[in-house]
Amino acid sequence: MNNFSFFNNTKILFGEGQIANLKAEIPTNAKVMITFGGGSIKKNGIFEQVTTALADINWVEFGGIEPNPHYETCLKAVERVKAEKVDFLLAVGGGSVIDATKFIAAAAKHQGDAWEIIQSFGGAVQNALPIGCVLTLAATGSEMNPTAVVTRADTQDKLFFNSDFVRPRFSILDPQTTYTLPVRQVGNGVVDSFVHVLEQYVTYPVNAKVQDRFAEGLLSTILEDGPKALLEPKNYEVRANLMWAATMALNGLIASGVPGDWATHLIGQELTGLYGLDHGQTLAIVMPAVWTYKLAQKREKLAQYGRRVLNINEADDAVVAEQAIVRTREFFESMGVKTHLADYGLGAEVITPVVEKLQAHQFTQLGERGDITPADVAKILELAL
Image (cartoon, rainbow, N blue to C red):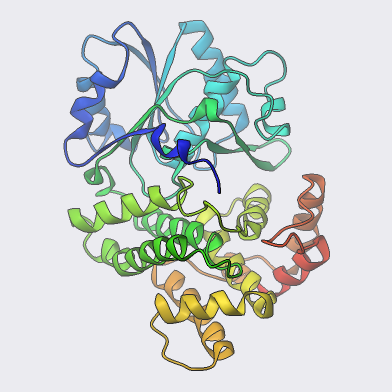
């Protein structure tokens, strides 16, 4: 079993009005940098709530972090951190802003080339600035884990790193901050959190009944409330349940003691790095193809998922498993996220570049059994056309 200590290392302040309690979580003598994305938080009132809560605390701001945060942008933030003598980082945004802030926190303390942080998958991190979060998008779970994904634009490399040094000290989750999100971001966020759970659940049976039931509860919640978020964007209870489900999906809880299959994420990351697709879009494209290709291997858990979560009432496991793939694709489509490469103007020409990137990044043994090779990835992408 994995160590559960991670679960208690990020303080969560959940609910309406929690941004007002921000000041109590930051040292009074801190020099804070507020990091954010394209500036929507200055239009919807969130930035004002944050700065009001930081009364009497010295702060500066750094905006312009991309939806798939660029390494180059992060380095500019590191320069600002050093010039301004910043000693605390506050990410206000979704997973991309939080991921970028994690990298900034580590790079600000790193001696040498900051890309070593990525190349070592976080092993080079020996220290980092403290981080706090104000979450504005339910999707990645980055607000309660030690993982970040960064894209190097000049080489089209999108890679992740892990380090406990960058785990957020606290995260504020006020569901009301998600009310004004564009439909596209809501759909992508629902797909992202749903796939996070599936990659830790649809593998092979290990008699982990508790973890399975946790996962099934999260999947049922996202399946039920995802479409409601599109229809009722200011439904507090819907937004609250989706936000908590997304956080729980990737804070390590449901991963404890069970195998994981991150092939969909790793293949999807290469599609984003090379072709600029949204992260959620790549997941919706790749996951059904992975399942179809590995149907025999995943049949038992797909059938369990089909019966327990999707309520497919069939006796034959093979039939249920196949229907589960179809129904999952339909769910992604219902969230406005298309599920084929052709939907995004891409075709077979992407296969070789994606496979070559995976090989360059040494991701050559994917899946819960490490048996998805580069040749298998090419066949999976053919199924995704």
